[in-house]
Amino acid sequence: MKSKYQRAEELARGKRVSIGIDVHKESWHVTALVEGEEVFNGRLPAEYRTLDLLFKRFKDCLIKVAYEAGPCGFSLYDQLKGNGIETLVVPPSLIPIESGNKVKTDKRDSRKLANLLQKDMLKKVHVLSQEDRADRELVRTRRQVVNHRSNIARQIKSKLLFYGIKPPFATTQTITQRYIKWLRTATEGQLSVSFEVLINTYEFMTEQIKKLNEETGELSKSQKYAERIKLLQSIPGIGQLSAMEILVELQDVRRFNSAKEIASYIGLTPSEYSTGQYIRQGRITRCGNKRIRSSLVESSWILISRDLEMRARYMRLKARRGGKRAIVAIARSLIIRIRKVLISGQPYKIASAI
Image 1 (cartoon, rainbow, N blue to C red):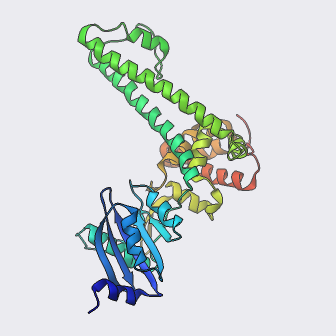
Image 2: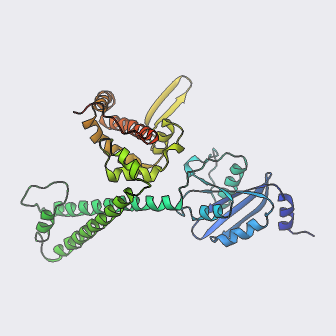
Image 3: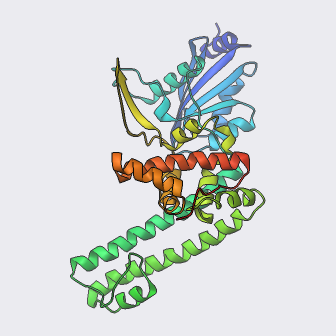
């Protein structure tokens, strides 16, 4: 009598096998379907060799795999691609949801992925090459350390406010060397120990940011990025670092077929609710790359101070919808112009300087 696995292999021979994987740190739950019939469903250790053993059962088949993008990254994708297996890394936010289904388990999730994959109903994220991901990680790490340092600065100022300690000179939002020198002598006893730790942490992070800035600067001068950096720096408000943030996140902008598509990727498309003849547009979806979105908004404030056309548009929108929505609209226009500049290879032309 043939075993369950032997029957599955015979059923799948020469056919397409759709495999859904629910990926976790310690284990993967795997479901394999052939023409709607489940030929495997089980939990495997999170090691590629165990998955490879499963694939060998379907050696004469066209194997297609899908798993959700998440904290486990793209190492599984790299291994599958290296073995010539077509793989979709699926954005969780774009997986169809069954109305009224309140039960969520690893088994159900992997089965759902396999079913949707078989029906070609899954969308995939664009997976960068390992080299591009390393470049992106460098720039992302810089942003993370900058944010960590800002948190430390807020903690220092919060403690000063709590204890009623004020510097004897006018201060700026940025913590200067003069401010740090005063801060080291502003407290006594155990309180000074608390401040000393925060000050040392702040200065350590400052040194790390300098190092990351240097590494990012060197990367921007490489043949891979230099020409595109030059093009982006022709746009008011975009410097070397912000240009690198945009480029490492987007890489090849030609993968976006339209301006609307790239705006949607960044989350700068207005949300919409419509029923019958009633249509209502709300705030931006924010379902996208928040790193580029933040960088674009920062750059937009400088853009409207130097480009007369963009300034005029901002003022019109501000009068109707408020400053916050107006600057977001400018950020949306900015990414569309960035796409145009990169595709055309022509520098940005300022309408008129103020």
